[in-house]
Structures are given as structure tokens and as C-alpha cells.
Image (cartoon, rainbow, N blue to C red; front, top):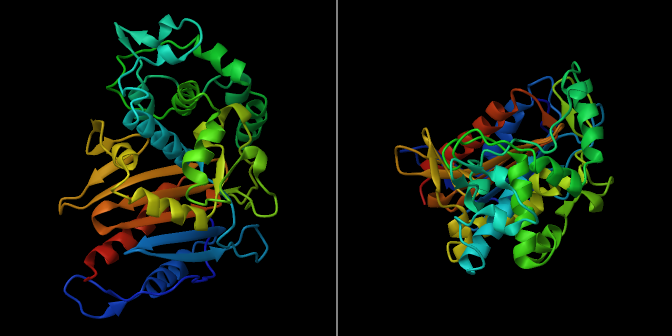
Length: 373
């Protein structure tokens, strides 16, 4: 990856125990500073922001730069494109609608759509609300699909052309393409990523609540949590939005598809995502608990409402979402048994991003898990 590393520790330090069976104290500053210094050894690093919520306290660290070739350190209010982490907001709204008895998880999606969609049934099994949220709907990844004139391009050209194409996609274009979908398996069994499924769920929730998706997220999440710097596409500020890069340090276009805002069109900051992490650990919120509950199993993983779940052999578990756009890659992870959460926001998207960032988070988790109370 491309980034990381001039460290600013912005919040208070707390003493933790070092490793299993050790009594030497270790604090988050020392732990993450050291990891960051090693991470920066990658010659292609750009920028990284790390947020940690642990035992009721929040910590922030920032490394690298928001602009390639310049020493501009990210900060608590630097905006990063969230990518698919945006889908967790949709998941919470669906869980809330279920808790409030506005919908049922297994409702046929067609009852929330205008017009007839006989194509959203396979062998008598219709696509349901929960299947849109646990990736088993069978709906393609993107609607409308990119034309061959774009997918056949070489190198970075395909990404720039795709972004120009998506810039002009409208709500009508989305539903016209939805009419052409052909399911190839029974919904509810085969998991695969789908931006279109998340967007369709957002449209359905608009009908349920009688309001726009943007207003719903603001009303139920952003405003009560005071996430004042978490915004949709139109409200982003170029003064606080980091530049995004690929693994060749090429500046990539920002996500800007108006009809796809629910699937990935939200930008946020370390400060705001720390507030969200605290919210996600609230076991008294029935919708939070429901959104993080497993609905389907795939290999060793479980899928909740736009969350992935993994349970370790020692009884600990992680609930997480990762998200990427053309120039950003991020992780949001909750460890319920530790009352802990981690947010990693980076302004570089590369083939190695998943492995490097997930490994970074796991090292933090293993150290905190071993810490004595």
C-alpha cells in the first residue's frame, strides 16, 4: 500500500498489559506508533488514519500525507471515501425498520417497488429484504452494468471511464436495468458482493419511511451521533477530502455517482467514525444488536446485515466491514467481547490493501486481547 506515517496521538493515553502472561504495561500510543513506523517502510505509502475505541475511551493516530509528494498530514477531520462501509448505515436502517414492525426481514422486495418485477423470482423464491442485506439476493454487482466499450479498456483507463459513466447514472437508469436482471440461483444461499442490492434496499426503505435515504441516515444516525463531518457526495468539501491513489501513485477520480450514494457514496472522518464505533457497541440498542446478528453462514464466516462475522477458536469474535473506492481502502471492525472497535482509513487502494490493513488491525486486536484489565 501507499501510505502511512508521521504519527499524531490526539487523545488521552491508557495503560494496558502487554502480552499474555506479561506484566509490562503498554499504551495505545506506543503500540500503534511502533506499528505505524514499520508500516511506513513501504515505499509506496500515502496516508492512514487509525481510530481506536477501547474501554470507553477514544484514540486517534495519523500517518503519511493526504496528497502525494507533499507533507500534508491527515487529521481527525480529514474526509475519506468510505466505500462499502456506507452499507452498514443501510443495514442499521433495515434493522430499525424490523424492530419498529414497519417491515419483516423476509418481505418480498417487490412489494416496495413501483411496477412489476417478475424477474426478481427464481424457481418460486422471490428476493427478500434480508437477502439484499446479506449479499445473497443474486442481483448483479452494479446496475446498470458497464458497457463493453469501458470494460475492454486497458489499465487505469477503465476506472476513469467507469467513473465518467457512473457520474450520469440516474434513478431511472437503475430501475430500467433492474427490469433486465436475470437471477441464476435461488436467493438466500449464494453470497456475492452487490452494490446494486444495497442501493435497491435503500430505495425500498425510502418507500417504507416516506423520506429520502439521505434524510433517513441523517435523522437516525448522523445527527443523533453528532457525526457532523460525515456527508454524501454533494456536501463534500474539497478542503478536507483527501486525494485518493492507486498502487502506482496515480491520483484516482473521486466516487461521484449520484444514483449509487447508498452503496458507497459517503465520506467520513476519524472523529466521526469513532462516534459510530461507540454506537455499534451499544448492546441496549435493539436495532444495533439485530444488525450485527448472523443471518447466513458462508464457509467459516457469517454474514449479518451488511456485516461480516468471524468467530475465533478462543470465543472472541469480530464484526466488520471493509470498503474501497478507486483511491481509498478502509476497515471498520467491532470486537464485542472486548468492548472495542478499530477504524482504518487510507487514501490508497491497491491489491495488497486488504491484507495489509486487516493484518494491521489484527495485530492491535491480539495485543488488546492479551492485555489484563
